[in-house]
Image (cartoon, rainbow, N blue to C red; front, side):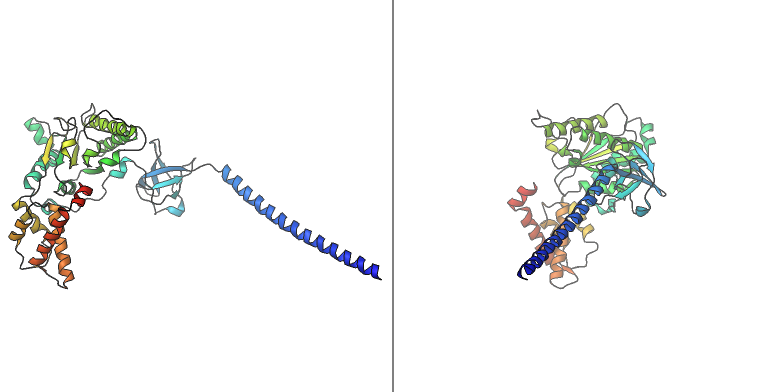
Length: 381
């Protein structure tokens, strides 16, 4: 009897061990199956051809014109899932064979000349600029008139300037003049910041300059506005780094486009800089940007005109503009605009819907305090 009990207990333990092993084997098999499924999915991914990254240049009905990295253009189909969701300058993923657009990459734009096109005209008008009547006349004569009335120059027998350089202290209206010009003409307007022409890889900056001018010729009459020109057009020296040499390559390409063998036709160039003193003389010699327009600090009459523009929509009460003109001596047009804004805030803080002369005086003191701050000048120039 005792022996039989031992035998039964041993058999029970053996069966329990077998069941445990079976359970472990089942778990291992399930894990291996999951790993096999994952491996099959990874294998399928490796068999799929990669998608092409390209840029939407134009939309034509249900199709789109895309530009590949090599510059080739193709008219392609658009996947049903993203039809109506694309816009020009979007970066998209396309299937390799048919180049059908499958997906749009959010927040990613390629650096192409089309990216600098101004699709919407600025709202700034000539009447919104105060104190720069002579400068506006010179800009109109050099840029606007040749585009609108080229016959006048042909009859007189002179050649219109190729470009204009606006120079002067910050905040005096250089960019504002360019915006007003873009609003006043029907020409294609291309806006570039000088630093945007400096690219990471060798030759890319010069290539971008060439493509921008080619685009401007295709869409002529057109105006190319290069802000912060000193970023690429400073005095050339013996460059010690590859970055400096790349900037010089870009600048030399710019010189070649402005005054090279290929005619600019109806393409006009406007440059703007705060550092006229460091510009390379090759850029501003006759035949290139030969019309130099200095945008200086506003005098008393100019400051009065600027005040009248920026206070036109403000609810004023007992404000002596003549006195404010005297108190704002040494301030730029941008500073005067800031004075008007700050005066409005002082009125709001006092729970008023009108602005008093004292509000403007407080605003002038605040703006001048910032202007005279040494740390501010070190930071912003």
